[in-house]
Image 1 (cartoon, rainbow, N blue to C red):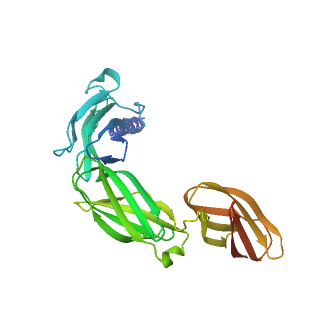
Image 2 (spheres, rainbow, N blue to C red):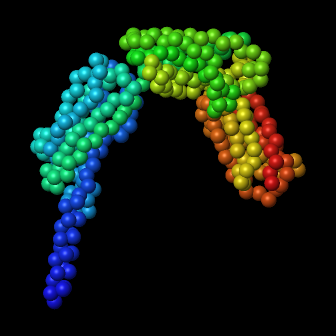
Image 3 (cartoon, helix red, strand yellow):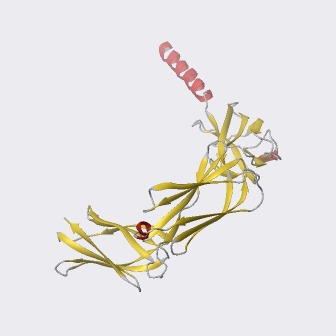
Amino acid sequence: MKKLLLFLLFLSILFTFTANSQSCDITFNPETADYVAGETYSVILCFKDYTATGLPENEKATWEDYFVNFTADGTNAVWEALGAGNTFSSSYCIKVTFVAGPVNSISIGAKATGNTNGCVQVESNSYSTVPIELKSFTAENKGDIVNLNWSTLSEINFDYFTVEMSLNGEDFESVTDIKGAGESRDLQDYEFKMSLNEKLKRYPFLYFRLKQTDLDGAYTYSDIITLSTRTDNLLDFGVNNAYYSNNNIHLDIASFIAESLDIKIISITGQNIYNQNYDVTTGMNSINLPISTNYSGIAVIQIANNNKIITKKVFID
């Protein structure tokens, strides 16, 4: 009996030690974000308890030492307590509203002490600041010349643009560098003209994007835009790739407009293997067509709209 009592006492001490060894955390909402310098944003920090000892999931906390790493242009931080009591000593969460400064990484953090479990946690989180705010980016085919135009609403700590081009929408190469305004809160317009030679005209579409590099070497990319190399309005889509693999025929279709295409797959003996309409969007469309047939051999793929038919051969095994 004495040994049993000692054993139960040991378990009680162990349980008490385990219950008091509580972990906690500070969560951030949003967890990640790209900020534009000079714009106003908010981040919510919440004190959370992940113990399984019956305590509530969200633990009230006393908040202290909360911060945002400001520079000269990152100012006007306002901290607000959220939740019960709306005070910094009885809230689950706090919110900071601030103006993003022109630094590559904005650190936001706080120290919180759990009011019930006494768990102390200090955490910070980093957010990216984009060097520019891009308003527009367009490409226009002028026959033998491609006109690229883009505009920025603001440029902070910015260095230069790199115009990049791709023949397939995936592999990009640098074409030229264009110096930026550096520091600007006004609308800035840019233009670049590129020759469209006969080699480039063999491709139905060209793809462009902007690499935007700031003075510290950090960079971001713009969205990819698509340019048709034809000016007769007959080529509104092209097939970049077609092959058979694992009971699927894979197609890479580049489309200049959103439209419905009729896709047929026919064997060389005239057997109808596949026939369906498929809606494509502007840009590159990767399509997998499931093929359930015992046919083996060469097949012809027909992709058509109201203007034309494009055919490709594949081998089904």
